[in-house]
Length: 170
Image 1: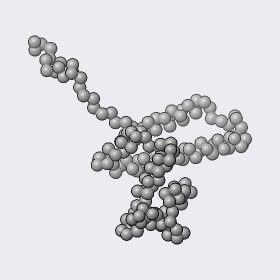
Image 2: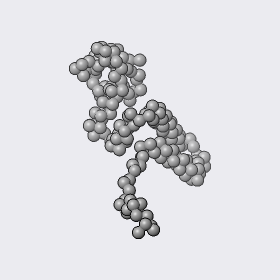
Image 3: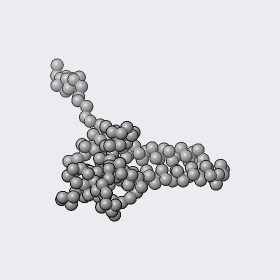
Image 4: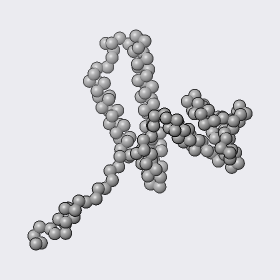
């Protein structure tokens, strides 16, 4: 695993290549699936997550399409301090890994199809395709359900008024 050191001046030093690197270089390492750890040069504390969040923030600042909407970010922030927070991280990780596996399968299927190796008769039926799409849609709705908690609506005045003066109390 490659070790990167982050200095108080916010510079990141690549110990393997003996040079300073930028956040863009860290992003490139992630894209290339290189394993690394970022440590604080003074304390030795692991700063990897902090730097990865910085990569995301800089990508969005550069105009890349936002992956995390404001609502998702707000809900994630609300989870901190919640008893369920310990379960959310592993849950989200499993869902992302599952999504990526499905994406890889679809890419491979399309690659084989476009290479002419799969005759059209071997394609799944529309009925099967519809069932798969339905199943995937349901799964992703379940994944996103924790982020769509409905807040309690204030009771309407008519309901409150009816409780104060129930029928027959007139």
